[in-house]
Amino acid sequence: MTRRADARSYDLDALRDRVMTERGGSVHDSIPQLADADPGLCGLALALPDGTVRTSAQADVAVSVQSAVKPFLFALALLDTGGDALHRIGIEPTGEAFDAIKLETGTGRPPNPMVNAGALLTAALVDGDDVDARTERILRGLSAFAARDLEVDEDVARSEHLLGDRNHALAHLMRAEGTLRVGADDAVAVYARACAVLVDARTLAVMGATLACGGRNPVSGEQVVPTEVARDVVSVMATCGVYDGSGRWMRAVGVPAKSSVSGGIVLSVPGVLGGAVISPPLDEQGTSVRGRIACEALSAELDVHVFGARAR
Ligand code: GLU
Image (tube, rainbow, N blue to C red; front, side, top):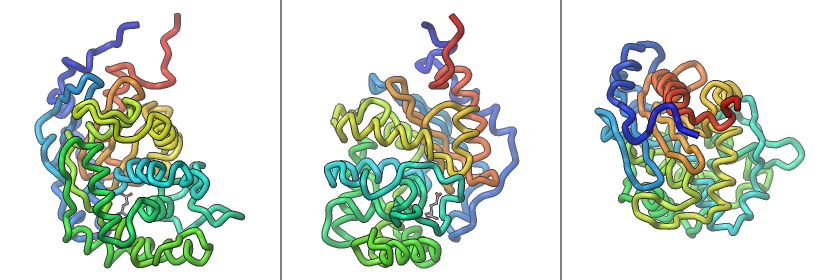
């Protein structure tokens, strides 16, 4: 079956020009560094299984990764716990905000790894005896997904740690339930630093492509996580990745994705491509306005809606 447009020759700058006419949404203001984001930023990238990376203008402008780190934290937690993380976190969508102070009834587990409770736990489950060791492990792991050395924006990490009251509340709640076994403040510190890792659209697209390629980074050739881990992560991105708008996203875009409050969206189309958009103004659910429009266009024009079989 031929795809409508070929990702190899798709004009990302033309798509960027189209979405730049959209002026809606507002930047997230939970921390000063996000409130200062450039609302005019828009970078797009696609990464293909043969290692080709295609980019638009501004695909090299970095922002803090924020929630787009969650699929990769889940992957690292699955890897480092030998799959045990799957028993310690639910995988059901919540229909609630990403930072809802709520755990699974009956088990006290986080509802899924794509909301803050789950990501606080996955960040605590990676190998390492203290905050620095776990942060280092996460940075190494994320860098393997990205095929380049990533770093933490320490100012962003400090703000996240200082101002993340809901994350502190969630960590304490998980301690009280016995689900979180490291100190609450340590858990928030590691998660805050994971959210503060700097990525651009090019990097995020390669990370998404690594999940889309069964855990093998198409740029470096490294098998970063086993195929089953990549499959588990992409499955949960599909059902829970776009906050409480995951159902609408799946119908309209049809591509497993994770959005973030810095305006990033990472895409993984199994076997086909990884992609990313970074544009800070967000809609009411916390998803990038231009990112959503760009992803809908990419899905339709590249014909990659995972449930969009053509009539035969
Ligand atoms: N660091 C943010 C928080 O924990 C991430 C939220 C997001 O991107 O959805 O609130």
